[in-house]
Image (cartoon, rainbow, N blue to C red; front, top):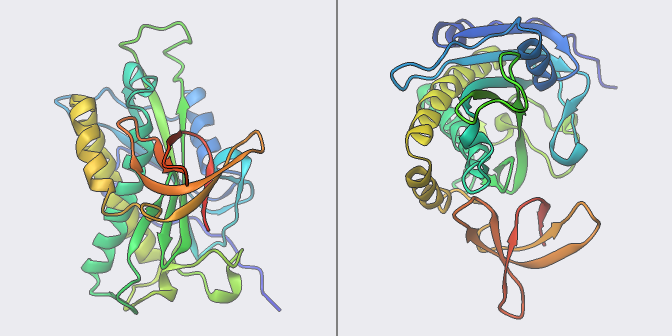
Length: 299
């Protein structure tokens, strides 16, 4: 019999030291939803970015009662075992709404998460149990380890109260990056056979609380650095990110099946990413197809 775990307010001293604002609660329906609500009612504000430095706010909860993934999927987590955080960053509206580059915002969130996890593992002298237990990204929004889902990402645009739908293109909007990670979840707690947890693949990790804080601290710094570079040169950074994704894109070179929201599917080999961060899928007849919104599974 599993014992229900009690939620407690996250303690995040390292994250608080580097973030512009931290909101920590023991329980909420969704950290993304809470962040959007607070931005909308003005209780969570982000200062203007100055000299290329971006402000980053963090909303954290120990338990989510209605965690969300892409396309209406649910994110199931356990308090004291899973990190559920949202990171809010102001960026120019023109970049957030430019379909030729805004797909890279989700990829940036994934790369920031990999950097944070790998940096935490290195800091504490931990090591993978097997050589092939590398952390990778499954396009467009999953963190994978050993072919299993370790975490998920959800990026959402929020209009701050100072702006409107007809505001100038030079105005800022807020992107909220939700990041859910199974850090210390035992095998018996895994929600699906396709999911996993970091502690099942890495030995020498610190306590869950230390892990959560160390990863979040690095994510704040990673979002600030990577997004500032992207805002300064979206097209140039898109090409650099495209090259970087080649080394961590889990689906690349595999036979996959893309499931679209209209119920149709497309099967083929994942070749790589286009300039706009969409997936290139090559079917058996040699034709290349662009996949922008779909759930992608490996055959």
